[in-house]
Structures are given as C-alpha cells and as structure tokens.
Figure 1: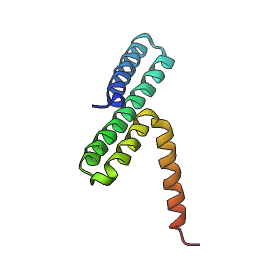
Figure 2: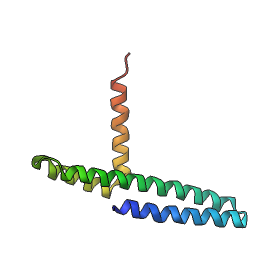
Figure 3: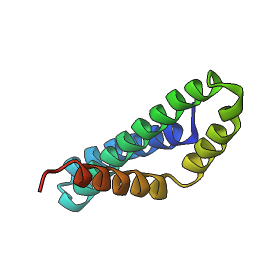
Figure 4: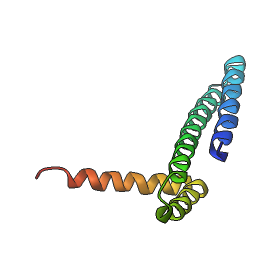
Length: 101
C-alpha cells in the first residue's frame, strides 16, 4: 500500500468528520471543507491504487527496462502533482495530434 492511499484514507475520514460536524453545527463552510477533503482523499486513494498496480507491472517487466520503470514510479510517488500535470499535458498534446484539420 502506498503512502498516497494511506494519506487518502486519512484525508477522507477527516473530511467526513468535518462534514458531519458542519451539518451538526450549521456551519456551511466546514461542510464544504469536509466535502473537499473527501474528494481529495478519494483522489489520493485512486492515485495510490494506480501506483500500486504499476508497481506490480514493473516487477514483471523485462530485466532491461525494470530499473528505469522503478525510477519512474519512485518519481511518481514523490511528486504526484507534477506527474499528474505531465500526464495531462501529454494527453492534451496527443489528442491534438489526432485531430483532423
């Protein structure tokens, strides 16, 4: 289990508690913060699941690409936002290449 999944679970629980307390006290800002933390927790958990899955694939990779794959996964673990930005940029670039003009 990756750190992102653990952090995601903790953030999600914190969000649920904030939401419940906000509903109990009538504090709409606390409720909103709680909902945002729940979403953030789910996103972190999903990211951690992807990293866990890719880690299993990297273990089964051919020997010559196993080490670069492990380094890439370590980068993704340490810099999740940067990794997400890079992948989003690559997806936008690739999708624009596929369009007909």
